[in-house]
Image (cartoon, one colour):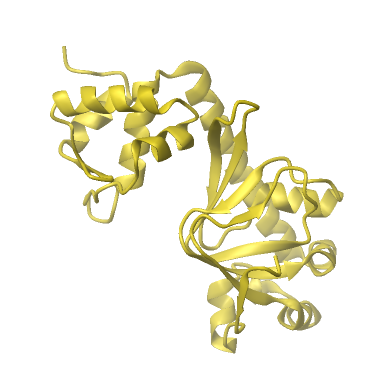
Amino acid sequence: MNRHSLRSVPAPEEWTRAFPFWEGLTASGATLLRSAVASKSFPAGAVLLEEGQPCEGALLVTRGSIRVYKTSPSGREITLYLVQPGEMCVLGISCLLNDTRYPARAAAKTDTEALGIPATTFRRLFREEAPVQRFVLELFSSRLSSVMRLVEEVAFHRMDERLAVFLLEESRGSRGIYHPVFMSHEQIATHLGTAREVVSRLLSQLEDDGLIVPERMRIRIADPEGLRRVSSSERPG
């Protein structure tokens, strides 16, 4: 992690916002965390961990996101999950607590900032601080549910359904606003674990149906309700 840039640690009033479990820590736990944490930043695309590497610390994302994914022997990739602000990577936590190697790859999806906690500090906090234990268990529970959904999608859903769900999730903003998806066909295929040609063909079909408007390096959502019908296997006849 030393090759990535370091930033100044948060000001005292930012600790509660940065760590979901901060307010529940004991005085000694808060002192330990404050003395050990370091703020880090990663440019989009930076690889944080390769498969088989040891985990030297835990990262809590404060801005941006980290993509965790698997790569097949042929080079095809599939996204397992994204680590969003306020979260840590559960595979990384598992490696830290069990002293094992990282079983996937992790890279910054966008320009990302995170708070790094050394492995020994995190293990001690997990051992001694109930709020940290609850935080980790809640992360594992939430992530297990999302990974089970991924398994269900891959095993039981058609690729056009998965593509529609992906476009809706990537474009959804607040108050029902849908933003353009700034990704190439190759990037979308990488996230879904399929070939670029498959994505291109399915996007052409969605365009013909009037559901999306492909533009250079971005896809505009023209009919969110229509995409939702596709995502639930309710294509118009």
